[in-house]
Image 1 (tube, one colour):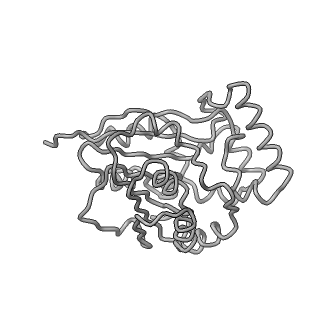
Image 2: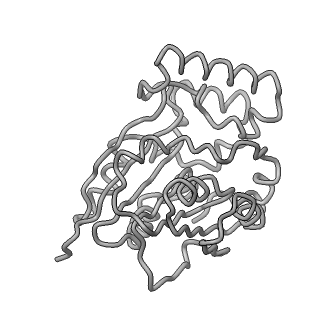
Image 3: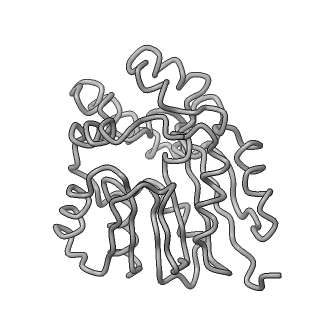
Length: 246
């Protein structure tokens, strides 16, 4: 069952600022693991950040599905000169395709369901043999939970925080016997690396300026990626499907 409905997401994306969509925060990490990739599918693809990144940097044929409006995503892809793409505006729970993909990714998607492990298993079903499964969830626990409680408490009710745990996330993939986990850990040092286009930040110029200065400072002193469960804003898993299926 979906926690937020379609109107929630249409309203959410209408409020976000989209000035730096060519930047994809997980790009450097994923470049270490993805090889021999041609096709890419993102589940919950709005506003198109990763589609733009992989199409422009690596020439992937990109595909996206989202049950909120894809007008913004389509506009962003076209404005970045991307024409080799397919978009599906429908509910992933009912999505059907005879095609499988070299990479099937979701970022901040599975935690919006009552049973995120079931969504991960469905996502994995679209991965080609030898292909990759990517699942990222926000880390809304510990210090980050307090930030949400103070600044955006209404968002807590649309996030299932049970999946925001390394062991739980790994177990949901280890249940799939034909996948091998390549990486599973928290990502970036602290909330300072959180998406500055998020409405919690973007609508407040001083917060946005603070985040930009702090991020630059961590970059300069090489402390921008110290994974930890208390402050890191993201948890991400990369797994590969066995090439030979039993």
